[in-house]
Amino acid sequence: MAAIDCGTNSIRLLIADGSPAGLRDVHRQMRVVRLGEGVDQTGRLAPAAIERTRLALVDYAGIIRSSGATQVRMVATSASRDADNADEFRKVVSQVLGVEPEVITGLAEAQLSFLGAVAGLPGVADPLLVADIGGGSTELVLGTVSATSPAGSSLVPATSLTQPVKPQVIAAHSMDVGCVRMTERRLHDDPPTEDQIQAALADLRLALQAATADVPIGQAAAFVGVAGTVTTIAALALELPGYDPEAIHGSVIDYLQVSEVTDRLLKMSRAERAALPVMHPGRVDVIGGGALVLRTVMEAVGAREVIASEHDILDGIALSLLDG
Image 1 (cartoon, rainbow, N blue to C red):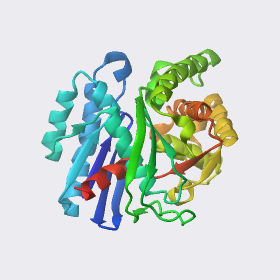
Image 2: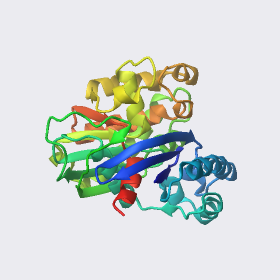
Image 3: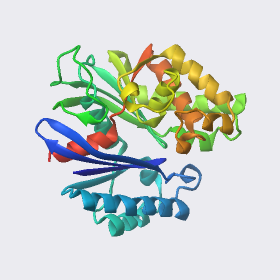
Image 4: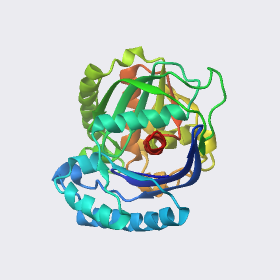
């Protein structure tokens, strides 16, 4: 089966073999296409951004065909939800991929993120709060897992999901804050000024007020962070010599580490961030905004630590195909 997650910043492909026991990775790939570039200001997907995404999809379509995948599902999230010309984008996708992309709601995005995250982290205490920090939005999902490995079991490797799970979402909320949106909206200088950081914080705190009205975050027994912002911050906190999914997956990063990394990133120039050995080139200009989102969410939750997961909405999309 083939799953595609098309977000505001990146488009990702997962090809996996499925069985009643779960998923086994065959191929994973990510391209940073910045589909949501400028959407916060214009309300439209830019022609250049659509073309970057189309070119990535041409390559993905070839990989899918050669893999022999018989099921394909593509999900498009924040930028596609917000754009007035989303229909134009859907037509491009259908022509290239041969399937209609699903522009899902924030709630559906939250549920798929939770499904992917909990499948990769057996043994985490219930109820758990998952934060999926994307380019255009951040999903907060509180839920439980009724069938996982016993508490204390070893983590599922970052390259495989082998445990069947039956997650139950208690509450979810999608906020229109993410690494790309906050950078474009507030963090205009490099590095950003203190006034710009405070303006971003004001936006984040306002968004979190609305989120916490829907999601009882105080009930969470564990806090899990997914997607590239979280895993990159974990890699920096761990001082890894390079990006290592196996070392990052399941790592526990405390609030002081997150805060220190956030402060450091917000004071760096673009060149300094680009020189970090774990930094993907497509995250260099937006990682400070993403780190600010993570730190502010942890403060609102009162989380002393975050568990980083390499599994997220992409895995949730694939698992949804497995479930039929």
